[in-house]
Amino acid sequence: MSKTKSGDVMFGQVVIGPPGSGKTTYCKAMKDFLEKLGRKVTVVNYDPANDQVPYEAGISISELVTVEDVMENLHLGPNGGLVYAMDYAEMNSDWLLEKLNSFPGHYFLFDFPGQVELYTHQDSVKKLLRKLEKAEVRLCAVHLVDSHYCSDAGKFIAVLLTSLSTMLQLELPHVNVLSKVALAEKYGRLQFNLDFYTDVLDLQYLLECLQDDPFVHKYSQLNAALVDLIENYSLVSFLPMDVSDIESLVKVRAAVDKANGYVFHSAEEQNIQSLLSCAMSSEFEHERTGIISEKFLSDDHNL
Image (cartoon, rainbow, N blue to C red; front, side):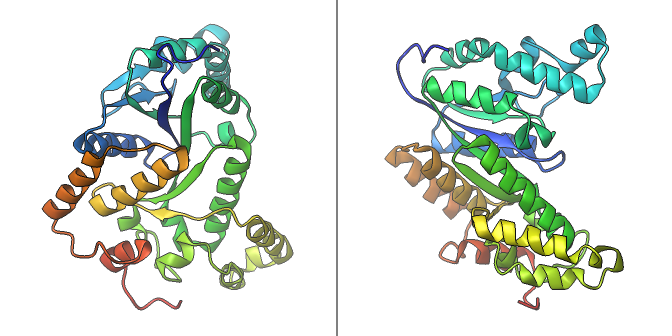
């Protein structure tokens, strides 16, 4: 795969996460936000199963391959069709680089499919990202997780394992995000304060929460081993985010820019301050999780 035609380094975010985690909504919100800061942003719709998106995609994988065509021509099911389409896209990665070169000076948001297996053990996405990196495209993975999983200890442990596996598989600078944080308690009250989940504090408390479930209790040793695995790696933490909240977008943007090495212009900082001022944000000096936990969650949790 050749390098960028201009010789300039490109920057972008690889937006991934399970179905329903808010990837497409995030891409639209982050595009609008970064454009207000003065960046030229192009969204790359890299989901061959979805061409109905709420943003204007500058590049769409549907020009190269679609799951519908694969299923029709090769008589595969939806999952097999998606895997084949992603393999095909990886083998034809020069097509993507040519498209990227047609947007010089742009910042890219890659909206990837939601099938988790593409990022945990299937190699096509990993190989594609390696090729982009060799072509001087500096990337950061933004892994979205629906915050309602925090209300169930077992599901949150599963989310932690998925996040850890994805980080190890993709081998990219990585920012994990708890999306839809305003709806964190939609499916049940959180056992602990939000910072317990974002900072991934002492997970032994989660094991205690599982003791009351007779079905899960018989797997207590397995659960303990999984928790130990997560804590031993000590890699997973989350940023809370609500796409309608400017402050949370500012913090995610800062984390991603630090991860992929993007150096923003001084005018961006001025524009950020202007946006925050317009939002009349009086909580900007609070801790990153304190801002959202105070805004969206009550104060009488156990921890």
